[in-house]
Image: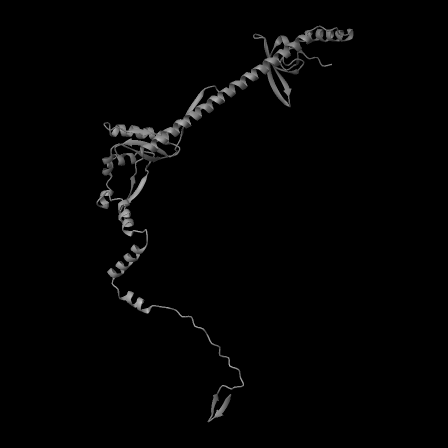
Length: 336
């Protein structure tokens, strides 16, 4: 209830208004302030000892053994300084090994030959082997000959076996078509180089095996194609022989004399007599009596009486075609 006393507005709880206060249960948090304060006061050595004690308290866990195993597995540094690691002459310590050289994908075989000649000329006493794994692909041409072209198994890579040092490394890099060695970058931020990485002998054996299998597969495919082509040609010749035999039988059947009516024989006799009277001349219209173009009518273009041959032009499919025919098979065409 509010009362005005001395210009001040006072408020007091009235019994008529119900109380709005309800008891609130506060959650009790157990915070060990003393422990936190104690940890803040510990030194680094004491905190490390406390951590080790907690590790040892766990059953079946030994952090000392874990650290010792990590130290054993950690590889030791091969080189004392980073400048010694950049020295390419250290590659010769491992003796002759296989190295991978990057080349052009299209001229890999040619680059391998150029590299072999360059190494033989610059280092005549050095023993080396250049290997470009490829498959000799055979293909039969239209003229019947067989062409053989190498197809690389690993395009863009060739393999070389030698004792590698800085001098040999630089001479190989200078060969035309060589793009460098496959390796890994070594050094630091001041200087980095791509140091060649050797290939294991087991990997090379797998490469040799893969190239051999690819060559055997290519040879078998070529032999199968040859056999299929021979079978197709044999079948075509048999069909041609059968068709020629049927043509001979039909020609024999057609060669049997047939009795023609009297009016037709008189008409042909009159035509032949008129044709004999008219001689063959260039530019005249002629008719073929026998042969492939029997009963064809064409224009006589050229006449050679020494060889007894004549060139006749026939109109086939809207286009004039010149054919050489024997004179005895031609007669002048009489326009009725």
